[in-house]
Image 1 (cartoon, rainbow, N blue to C red):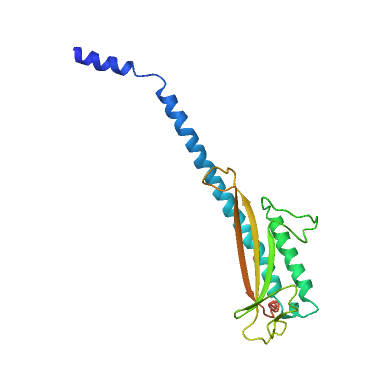
Image 2 (cartoon, one colour):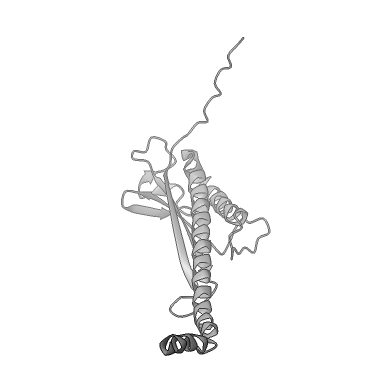
Length: 192
């Protein structure tokens, strides 16, 4: 019987506060994991929004070869930038920055556009629709020119604890071939 009472007594007299110490050690680690998960979710959502904005701009520029005539090239580039900024602002991109209330331009994300053909590239705004000696405004250019839009976004993390940086640069590219697309004609309605 003495052995049973000794075991019983040692269980009753465990050091008090052990669970409080364990809790104090585990909670900060759990909070860091939760913040890291939240940051990853924010990062992923921001990257998707930036990519969507880049696609919107590149798609607009590539929709019609006449966008790249010398008279239209700078206007098309401005409209592409506006579409990218409006799409980024519309997606409630955290950290979005623009000094223009109409979102014609934005500074986070930044906008860059080039026309590309083969290994050559030219700035969209100043190229007058030309890449080397090729005219991107001609629908017969074969292979067609490529509109390349790159948006660069500065993502700010929730906690900048080492080894995590306080800012992460997100670059999203979108490329579309210039083509003359025509809207589909409506299907004829069936008569009863």
